[in-house]
Amino acid sequence: MFLELRHLKTIRAIEQTGSLAAAADRLHLTQSALSHQIRALESYYETPLFSRSSRPMRLTEAGRRLLAGADVILPEIERLDRDLRQIAGGATGRLFLALECHSCFTWLIPTLEHYRAQWPSIETDLSMSLGFDAIDALRDGRLDGVISSDPIDDPELHFEPLFRYPVVLALAPGHPLANETRIEPEMLADQTVIGYPVDRERLDIYRRFLDPAGIEPANSRQSELTAMIAQWVASGHGVAALPKWAIADELERGIVTARPLGDGMSSTMHLAVRRDEHRLAYMDAFLRLAREQAGQRLDDISLVRPSR
Image (cartoon, rainbow, N blue to C red; front, side, top):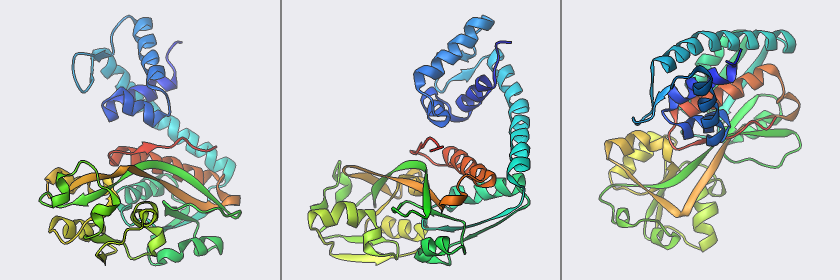
């Protein structure tokens, strides 16, 4: 039989993302490899799977039939894989998470909802109450994972990369800097920079942009809430360096605009876990779900291939 599971995963990814490039990124393949898969299927069955004259790509009758099969078969295969992993790795455990990422609720809450449905015997919890002592809490066992964009070199911990994302300067559309095509450090010397209430060296805009240039902004403001920061920016009370996906709604509504910082700044989101636990089956399942949900819900990110 010519048809394989990878073909079903391919057709589902293309339908969900709307393009070969995005589907290839989700599946950790090159675009040419994905195109080869599609051409091989079309050649074998002697029928096209997509209408190539439309954008986004539209499924033909044969493509829709293949997708319908994928929607039935892949969930069952995934359940089977999960059940076997639970049998092999133990079906009980604990996953207490904390956030060092104030903007991560949009994809992390759905991730946990799916995870609880698939691994009901794993005790889960999500908190920001530990603030930025979360890494210490991970070391001493109070936590089992920390969502962080600030990896450190620690022999006790493993930082698993999830996805890369651009960090941009958010501005009110009428802000004078909105006329610039890119933002240089000296342009912020007379600005109010809005950020999260964390140590200065933890903020990318200072550590990677302003401090190396010796620039100090005129004023600063802080909020724990991304929505509040975005509102302050929209109201003209300052500017803020934020993940582009964190202000996707504001950008779409036109109340905020964004400009690149210098040549463009990017960062990587990680899940930090204790090194001796990062290969547990239920931890691996959470990592796979986290990448999947982030890929489906966040714009302008690039998923990172698993490190194992």
